[in-house]
Amino acid sequence: MNTLLKAACLAVYVLALAGLAGLLPPGLSGTMQNIALVLLVIHALEIVVMFKQVRLYRGPLAVSMLLTLLFGLLHWKPLADEQKRTTGR
Image (cartoon, rainbow, N blue to C red; front, side, top):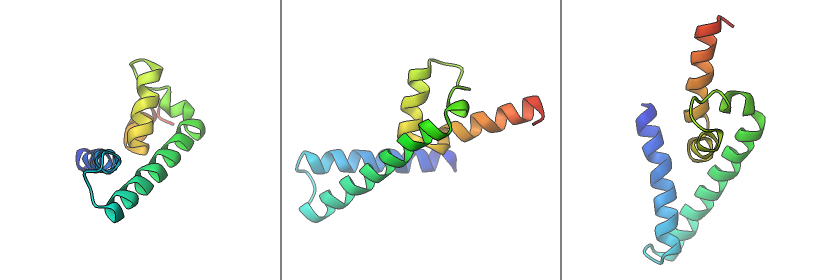
């Protein structure tokens, strides 16, 4: 399920970029761009609010921030859940 949701996020971004390139009808193009913008704003806020969980990523922080910007809680929630299981809190 997580993979399907991540694919849906990527599809929104790809369709928004396709709209910017003029490959979609104007009505659909604007809609996809608005949806992508809303997702990016929400995910940017998640980086700020959930920074403690974003930092749990084992790789570079910049990569974790990028993944959170793209996927939001689909990235940081499993990290938080894993820490919760490990520490028992």
